[in-house]
Amino acid sequence: MNRSLLVRHLGRRDYLSVWRAMQSLTAGRDENTPDELWLLEHPPVFTLGLGGRPEHVLAPGGIPVLRCDRGGQVTYHGPGQLVAYLLLDLRRLSLGVKALVRDTEAALIALLADYGIAARRRPGAPGVYVGEDKVAALGFRVRRGCCYHGLSLNVAMDLSPFQRIDPCGYPGLGVTQLLDLGGPSDLSRVADDLARHLSRRWEYVTMAAAADIPPLPE
Image (cartoon, rainbow, N blue to C red):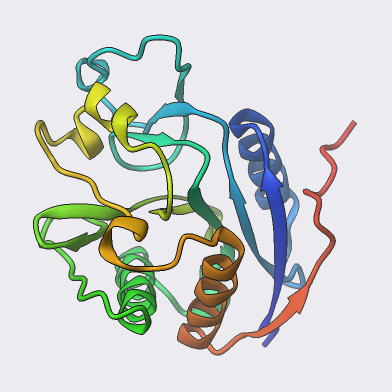
């Protein structure tokens, strides 16, 4: 079994090009394609999942709204938020979708525990919470037994755009971030720590990959 995980630190990238690259890699992979973890941040954007209801976007203003093919409702991405895209062969991992979500949440909870932050799940509402506030959101797409999309973790960002939406479809849901919880504000440090927790969860050997997304086919 191929247990290597290629880790790409991509910096700040626009949402649409990264989404298309994830689709392309997933469509072209086979049983020998290594799994990948992409760590990055996006310029400001609201994204609506497959079943996302437009009425949960209250007042987007000048921030673009994109409908994408992940699960879930509406969320916000912006500078200072760590986004981690998991491009994994679930069949090779013998992992179902529920277990994927559970394991990803567990890795996030363990990460926050390292920073002295007590986080938890909420039944029926995927993601990770501190008290009543959401600190990390999850949303995946599975095709041909492989997943893409992933998670976003609020690190040190402007949280005000979340007031323009019903986060994850929940009116009035509070959001928080590591900086306000006494955690680190260094995105690169948090990215490295998260990669370690995710690789440990699925017993990967991590390998650094080029800091670029695979090229789209001609």
